[in-house]
Image 1 (tube, rainbow, N blue to C red):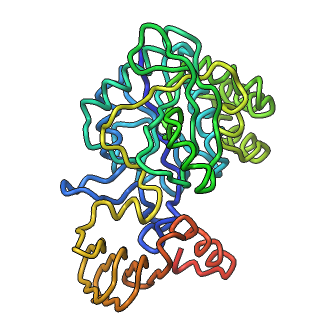
Image 2 (tube, rainbow, N blue to C red; image 1 turned 180 degrees about the horizontal axis):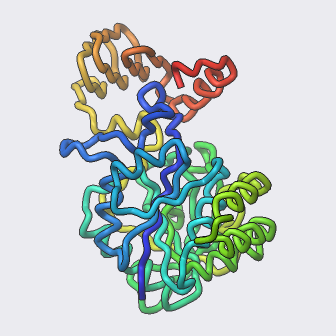
Length: 352
């Protein structure tokens, strides 16, 4: 069994504006004491199980950053972002042996216990190698989080300690439904990490997204020829923008989930997740940088330079950089990307 990790690194981290920008998205930033970027830490974990190097899928503007942070990776460039079904399919097209195991990892997750995580990666790869299953990683919920999709697990899979068949995938729920999921004990957060053979995922794409599969076959035939770049550009201009979850996993029957034991996982999906690594005061304010709170509680404050003071507020997010400041209610952190959308409309390239 050969394991080839595939790191998805084309995102712009729009929920982390104004810190995350087009020229330096979240995955190239560090939130750890060792100073490693998120993508560098992801690559280090991936290399512990890799049989023969790793692949990174990104966009052309980020190619240089990927090569700087992960110089040992083979970089696959998407001509335009078309979501995870296209990214994963493109990576699979580059597999010379389609029976090799593709381990798909987002570039911007945090893992605190590498040993536990590595064991789970190996178990997922072994499962995908012994059966033609599409394997995802499910995280046991610690709260009724509405920012994640959920997986309802089915029966246990013989011969594996943490593996279950999947009964159904669920999109991000409202709070009431998320609370029901957590109470039941049968639902897991969908982490966005996967393991499968390149052959299995290409077959699933062929069944569920035939136009994408047709394009991937054209790309595969053009690899290592003078037409490679132009064929990829042409295919990407025509394919659908859709996630692997919505386009494939929610429809096929051969899905499984590894119920992950606690390895300190954080997808760092919005400011409330990033703030888990800030200092916390007695009133539950999470602070990084030069800031003071007065009669305030539950706030998230990050200051890069200027002093920030908040008075008499609750559950507020204040993020200050050299050229911009974000202020929003804490329960709206998932909507920060809407600010980026407005800045795009206003053509504020200086702030993007």
